[in-house]
Image (cartoon, rainbow, N blue to C red):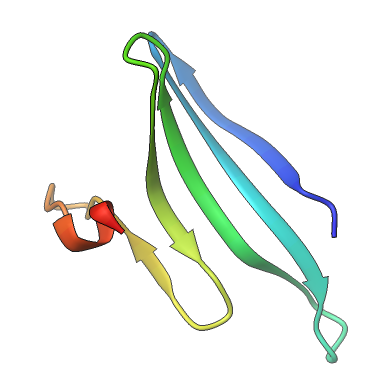
Length: 75
């Protein structure tokens, strides 16, 4: 499978991008599995996963309300 790279946002020291693989479901639909969104901090030289999606679930480290899912962030 090809690895897909999508640049989402680039601002200051941060770059947010998505990585995914697509496979063809028996229905004919193309499914992103897995699909991850990551943030790079170029100044600190760190990377952090922001979200992860596969066939079974979608998870976000940071909710819209500002809550951080610490267990998910560590994993």
